Image (cartoon, rainbow, N blue to C red; front, side, top):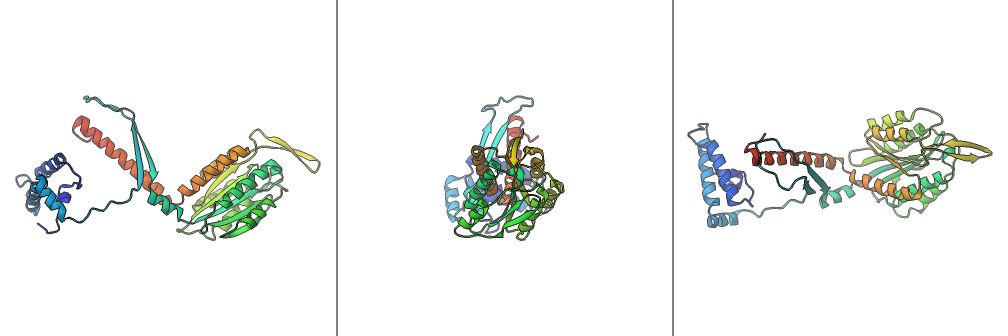
Length: 345
């Protein structure tokens, strides 16, 4: 036997294995490797190693002495915290198919939270300043923008676009450290006017974002608008550009779906929130749509956005959690199958 052979590894066990688990693992391995049934080269030697491992680990005194020779077992940090809720606490052993539901809640561990917090965010706010945004709507947009600015970290890259029937870079993409007063002042000075061409706003926002697009940052656009396009190219064309480069667009709708009448320069017009367009833009870029019709709802929207941006700073974590969930379901299914039918179905 190799001097480095690990008895636990030979039997496929953890160091915390119980005597019953050791016994089961040995019998399973011995049945598979016994010379009477397995004549493959090297398998007889492995069978003898398995026997030695079992003799040591099945004797508490010898096992304690063996454990003392092993290196300290490292405990890896928890990737996720897991909570499992089953639809039934007890299941009768029947010779027929039974159904059980399992709710598995996976929460990123502390190490993942720290890692995500350290990943720079490449964020662009695209703000609708068209005539239809006059009054409370623009105030809502400004308030959201200021709240987001105040949450920026020194390593984050930030930019702001204001648009109506044309787009203007209010704050170019760069890292902004220290006092945010100047940034907030630029936001507060925004005024309404002109038509609404969302395409130009998103196009300008994408131009700022792509200056820093690379695998080390996470890039997002937040579009705040009533979604009512009055001129120009279809907004979905800009969404396609962002989606092709992996840039998510979060859309925030302000105003009312039923519409309201606003007046300006002796004229009046009815404007309504075009939720269908905003939902489509978010869907096609794998972002999300939020409704912010009032100041109270706006606060909830901001909190939700902050959560999304933090969680999604590390997309590989998301795929890792999904893979872990799938693995957990497979293992649970196999375990229950063994419990009920003594075989894996």
